[in-house]
Length: 188
Image (cartoon, rainbow, N blue to C red; front, side, top):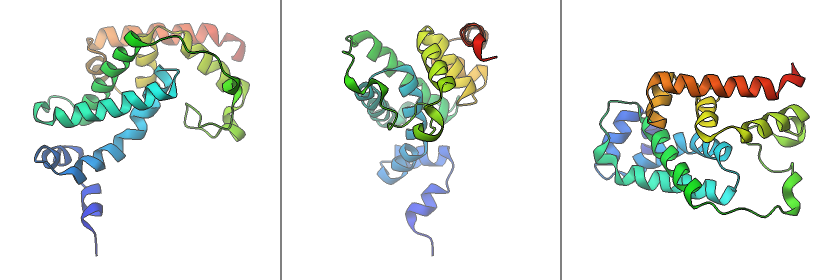
């Protein structure tokens, strides 16, 4: 016998939005569980401070909850949530203060920003070099690359997330890819 939570988990994104719009907290919890890790990964790659990352993801879901009635269905739920998160990341950049470098800078026991286990894979020099190269990209280029390569979004979706046209999103992605190719040349 299936529980109500299992039945909710089997629903698509739009029916969950409909239920959550009606005040169903469990339906919204399913959306948080479904998209939370991906939003966290995206924010983690865009921001260097884990506290800011957690705040951005939390603020994104609060804004989504408050904005359920404004979801227009002209984009996917994924695109809508990533767009909210992208705006919250921009807000975090505006209020960001320099962070002191601590003793934990080389802590490879932490969760990898690429979703890989540090001890066995991410401690490698290639991943470190890639993450360092990503960090040097301008925010929109980094976001376009991450949304395309990690999240598998189409240029149209990336444009919606970053409030750009599909062509501009493609341009940011192309410039990011070129910059990464150049900075990672020693790995080719």
